[in-house]
Image (cartoon, rainbow, N blue to C red; front, side, top):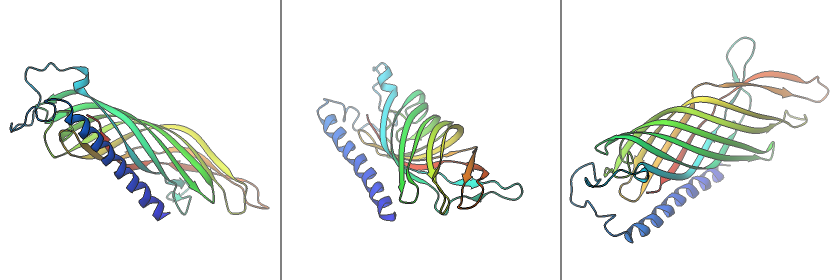
Length: 246
């Protein structure tokens, strides 16, 4: 399993760097694009005479995510306890974009960031598990990647929003028949990101986390025992590596 994790992380990094190289080659064929403001020491590299268009404010992104999905059984008394020895971990891809609706000198900005994540997990014990998400965040950024024209090497951002999710999670008690959780839920969420790169190549490492857990039931059947139902809580968090097209 650990080797698979390293393989997925390596694939995500290679994907982002490959897309960056492709965009670099494209930019070299756009006269004046890459070096339109070479030698100017300012955060705002936008041409003063240029009219701000919809495309100026829009950036698309893609990348890979690792999603964690711990499940807790809630007893009538006491603290919740983890239901599984190994919490479900998902690997997936992300596509989305950001629309910047306000900025100050291309150094700080406010934007809205909708996206979609599709993630899978597999174990010999439970089988294939699937998670689909549609996060949308209102985001505040400073430095790199706050707008298409920012020239800083590094920057960061924070966001507040809602993550809508669907999860299909198979599970089974030892010796019992397979069960599954199939549920849609939505939760307020936060995100934080580290941005780096400038001009053509922009990258981001992003962390997101649900603020509120959602509740469901776990049904457990063991041989020669009556079935039992437990109240359970679920909460998702994840970390991803993304490339922003320019």
